[in-house]
Length: 108
Image (cartoon, rainbow, N blue to C red):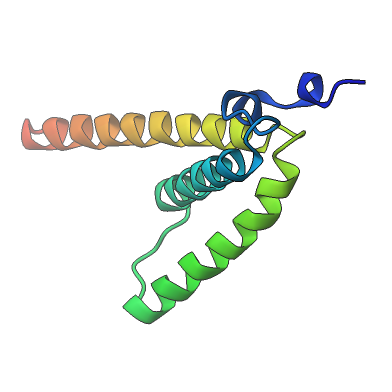
């Protein structure tokens, strides 16, 4: 049984089996970046600087577990899909608000 055949897309892309140290760091950075993007697009609120720093520290700590799971499970791929859905939602929301403001300025 070959372990490389069971890897999900991103660990296979980063060659986790041939260069585990660099591959895992790349996977971790990718998961942290995507998690921050999903958090900012979907859940972030205006918070004081100290609370924001604490959130990002705990987010980065939680991503270590996700990185370990992300070797064989599609964690990174799920974050990519979530980010794409939230980006599409934000674009549609922006267009909707823009249309409403144009209708209101035209009187109705």
